[in-house]
Image (cartoon, rainbow, N blue to C red; front, side, top):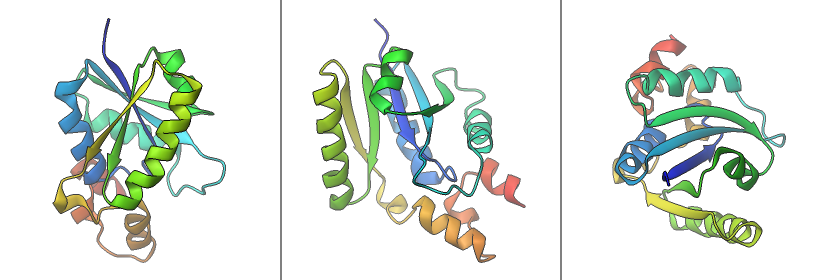
Length: 155
């Protein structure tokens, strides 16, 4: 049975922190599906299609990584995709507290799907999509926080 993992998030935009988590998870799973979630309570800066385009461009030479756009519960998307694992990145203790609550709820909904947490590299701790969006909105240079494929597309 393949070890399929869903890495859910908004990825608005895809940052070096996201790439760090995906790259370090590659040896752990047979397939990583980057799930661009549609969250009706958030107002994204970039379209889901643009975010998926970035993932597909960044990982065009990595057959173990695919991108999808999904709505609804992450656990339901896992079931549809045959993913038995959810991947989440942790930067701070506060991230863990929030993510553990979600992982506990997901485990209650389906005990066959397990959540894995990877801590981000210290150099990416301050890289958050919210901060990157603020830099972009205010005309700053966000390229230090973004993969080249994303930074180049914003020029």
